[in-house]
Image (cartoon, rainbow, N blue to C red; front, side, top):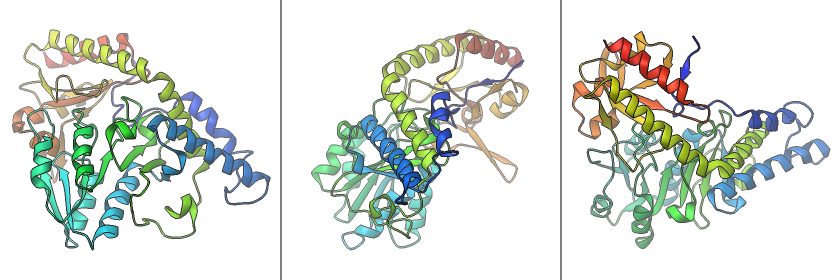
Length: 373
């Protein structure tokens, strides 16, 4: 039988409409956007149109969009860029214990260069308490970086409340929204962020292209040095096909967002019901309500998730554990939530997407039920 893909949080298939948008810029409109002739003009127009489509989805102006090589680059640019630009004001950064490595590792890098990092705890649902943010702020705090939605358990953070706190104290606020853009509303003024990260391949766009939204007045050091591309903020010839594709993906998300939220929430909850029929004592990981509509992280008590998925190769999903030096450990996210080791090693993340069907979910639940008996 065909494989059932339930790992959309890892990456999404590229939508057909996106591929169609990209193809001309590999073939006939292949020019360098900086060139003054017809070919360059066609490429430059594609970059401008892509920028405008991203801006519409985020609810900002197109000059506030900086194209990057992906979400990791955007996170590095935001965190290191603010740190180096603001180091005369202070050296303190606040983040959480459940961030993606593209945030935690830049923070650890800065820590090794004299910056102080506060790692905020989360509750049992993986949520940051805004009061903890307030209590962590010092006179040296220059940046707060908290993800919008967690990639493993889907918990959505109180970003707007944290944004209020940051603005009241004139502290730059960044959110990694790689997992939320295209799944829930991510309008920057509603979220009250100064910097936001977008990853193209998480919303049916291509890999290798992303965005850093920069609110006017936010000072961020240049991350990649070279020529004056992206308004002098990111050097390097633009990835024209990728930008065109990301723009189309954002346009689709803007048109389909309401339907995606409703449809995926329904399918996710139906799937959880099907799994509970197979395993009565299944445990949900993450917030029961404030959660991405497509994400279901559950633990199957008494089993090892890696072994389960190894026996159920028809279902493509992710585990809540990692293997290092032949020792299996639960993910830092689940550990930060206080999940005990046995439950963490039994955790599976199912993430649904645009092409997930009820029939697939029924088959997946049946297969998992069979392999658990």
